[in-house]
Image (cartoon, rainbow, N blue to C red; front, side, top):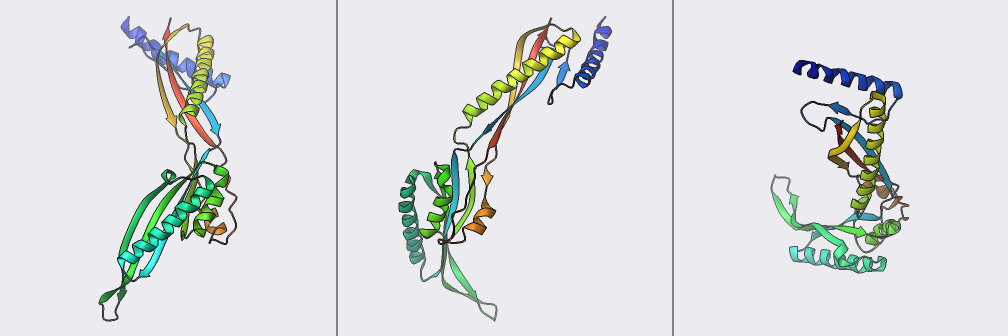
Length: 247
């Protein structure tokens, strides 16, 4: 009798696939049947939520070249940094929303025709990442940073500050989708489903939207125009696998 039970498994799977093709059931949808456990019927459902980003980031750089001493280079960078931080207060950005991501000072070498070299001052650089809670002000903040002395503006992007609440909404949609598909298949195959015995979820986070190219063309300096940066929407997806008992 055991071999007869095992032979039923591929037959049920084949019938399920035929029904899915005939009825045009939604994709993604995966159905598995086993005889090893009581949770022998599983369905995958997907839920998606389109969310408008509510936070922005812009990275800015401060660069000085051929300064007489390393101390002078550090002082110049500090002066511009303090000007930038003070300017950001005009846009409601506090110190805790400005993070230094890189800082260095190196000798500037001049190379001689005979192959030797000598130190001709010092170069310095600092990179700052600015968090902008009012996304509509992101373009203005980027321009204000250059007016305050920043020499580079890059890696401007939008994101979602608290994605977990949207993941919960996407998960609810995915569960409803899985239940709906399970009910359709069970009805067509004459299967009675019991309680849900297990659930597996996988989520995909939306990637930040970057506008580097737009900034390089529209904001080449402090006197440039303000780039009209649009946050658009980002998609948060949840995929849920529900396991059912078969009666």
